[in-house]
Image (cartoon, rainbow, N blue to C red; front, side, top):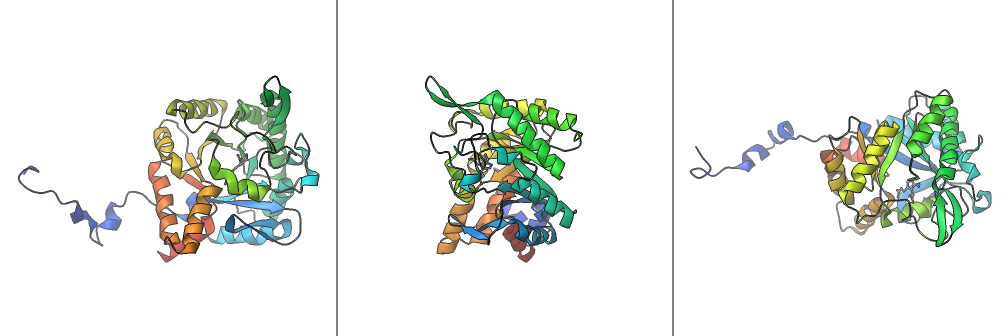
Length: 332
Ligand code: PBG
């Protein structure tokens, strides 16, 4: 019988008993990675533009890590928060043996060996100018020196691996950073440590609250000279992902997430590597603000967004909602 003779009825598959059987997209806490901001001491501080997200003092980390473990999350990823006085032009805090992230990794791996601990590998949280690399003066203003930065990123990743990081995650958008880090890890005896590459990372307004949280906003200029132009065609995303694939990334990430579902979908299946998406601080802030105002059912809106990312091709998702989402999934 053709559709001309009989009306097709998609609703036949939408009965309560059929819906779960034909649901093609699933989401579990194990798919989610929780970003954590860590500072030296003091009390936990709530980030003003990210209600519910805190800068944690070192001593509070094991408790949060334990929550992540109990919730069945895939892991956590660490970002360091430094006082301004501890920053310098070369971001030495990023690769110091006693750096904040290095100490946090050691603490978490000691207390919770079953927790997957990733480290964000970048310099902007540690440089006094707030850029992701070495800044120089050029004929038309400042620029970030790509190859001088590679060395510092490689040192940072190596020190994170030495501290016990299970995964390093370069986010500085320097050309060749994955290769430089892979070489440094291999030479240093860490051939087994995988790289989660922020391969496709746009110069996005959605990072605003993160820079607030980490105090990492650039003091002058912007990041458009190294992060991707949101107006660029898909070729730019394919080129970046392709390069990081060749350079030896183990996991490829797209960032931000929801505004770039098309990019995620375009990368899906093109690389023999798992794809990740980062639901960034601004995405969190939007959903949280609307939820707090009572304008959205926050739990449903968040789970819907996370399912959309899974459908578009994300294996794993970095999200500030990881713990809450795990709870909402349990309650659903
Ligand atoms: C470091 C880094 C940033 C984010 C992750 N790693 C900031 C930036 O690129 O400015 C943003 C994450 C978020 O907004 O949640 N370079």
